[in-house]
Image (cartoon, rainbow, N blue to C red; front, side, top):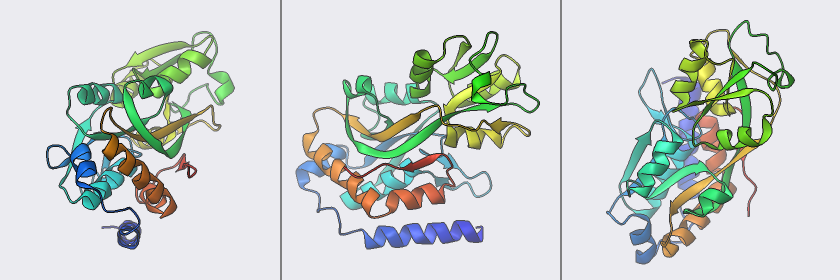
Amino acid sequence: MRPTHWLMTAILGLLIAGCAGISAVPTPEARQALAPTGKLRVGLQLGSPHNVVRDPVSGEMKGVGYDLGKELARRLGVPFEPVLYPSVGVLLDGGKAGAWDVAFVGFSPARAQEWDFTALHLEIEFGYLVPGGSSISTMADVDRPGVRVAVQEKSQPAVFLSRTLKTAVVVQAPSLAGQLETLKSGKADAIFSVKPSLFEASNQMPGSRVLDGRPGVDPHAMAMPKGRDPGLAYARQFIEDAKSGGLVKAAIERAGIRGAVVAPLQ
């Protein structure tokens, strides 16, 4: 394990130990609402460091959603079971099928019609990734005739682009991997997503770069099925404790995320 990675893991462990008594002990009703099967099933999008990524060398899982889900399970006194998905659209479909108990996703009023949410835990910048040698050098170069922008379908970035792009062509892809393939094959000129995912993707495309600037922000929160009110109340307090106690900040640093900050306390 790299020294810096070991240090961040140790710091995260100390913060968890130091904050263990902040949240009230969950009531039986809260535990049953959050983990009705006896374990906490956490929906996560694999490949997004604000959710979860797998270290290519050690195989270790890390990410803000992963760390918070694991700690929530510990406080509930139940096993932690990450449920991984290639895209947010598939993740949400899994939730409708009852495959997870909580998930970490972008918040929107439309999603709040289907799911209950805690307060925000992350504010994540949107951005563009362009390949090496691209004539697109600034965000102002994107929304022009002939420019094709790949975005993940059913995602918050897709909703944002539908409201903001006027001239460029939007190319839908099923996942971040699909966006990358579209860019590599020359079927798109840029990728639009959240910056932590873009910086992660840029490691797979030598010469590519994330454009400077901040076109918008994707607010992230914990979601859960409606009708689990005792669990929702506990989850909301847990997220506030995780922010004030430094757990979210430590998870951001452990995952090496750029382009995301801890959301303000509520």
